[in-house]
Image 1 (cartoon, rainbow, N blue to C red):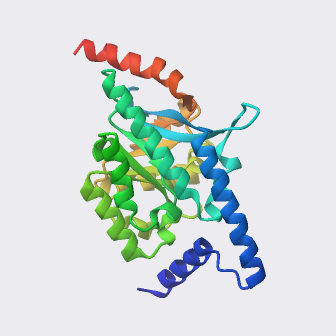
Image 2: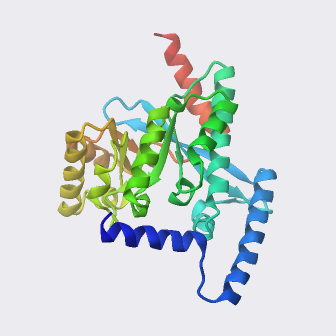
Image 3: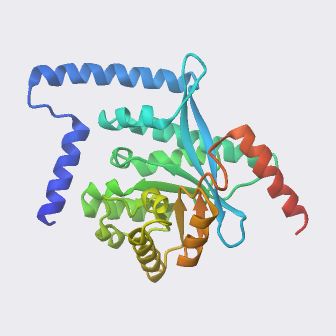
Length: 295
C-alpha cells in the first residue's frame, strides 16, 4: 500500500469513527450522534423519506434505459425537502447507512409491486455513500434486502461517488468485485469533477460511468469542458465499460454534443425532472407496457 492510500484510509476512518482529540467533546458528539440516529430511525418508521425517480434516456433512440432512485424528505408541514438539506449531516456523523439501506428496501418493494402488476423496469440505480460501503457485512445486508423482495441483483445498480476512492484500494477492489460477482452492477458517479482520480478506474471494471454535471453545464460554452468530456468518454469506450451517462442535460444542444462525443445515455431536465413514484408510474410504466404489446 502506498503512502497516499494509507493517508486516505486513515483520514476516512478518522471521520467515520469521530475520534475527537478532546474527551469531553467526544462524549458530547456521541450523545448528539445517538439522538440523531434515534431521530433518523423514527423518520424512517414514520415513512418521511420518499423515493423520487428520474429516467435515464438513450441519446440515440430517446427511449428509457434505466432509472435513478433519489431520496426526498417529507417534513412536518408536508413540504418535500431536497437531499442537499440532510444528506451531508448524515454522512458527517457516519449514519447515512441507515438511509441508504432504507432506500434500497423501498426500491426493492417498488420492483416487487411492479412485477406483481405485470410491469417491469430492469435497471434501477440506488446511491450508496462510501460510509455505507464500509459497514461490516454490507454485501450480506444488501443481498438480504433483495432476497426479502425476491429482487434479482441484476436489476439493481449500486451507484457510488468518486469519493469512494478515498477508501483503501485493496478493500475497495474486493468489495466492488464481490458485489459484481453477486450480480449487481456498479456505477461510478460524478466522474470528471474536481475530485477526479483516474486511478480509480483501475480498481475494478465499473459497469457504468456517469459524467459529472459540472462538465455538462459548460460543455457548450467551454472548449475545455468538451475536451475533457470527449477524453473521458473515449477512455470509457476503450475500457469496454457497459455504458456512459451524462447528468444534468438541460437542452438539446448539450444532448447533441454529448451524443456526438459518444455518450450513450442522458439524464436531466431536458428529458424529465425527478418524479414522485405515482407520476413516474403513470408516465413511464404505462408507455412501456403499451410498447411491449406491439412486440
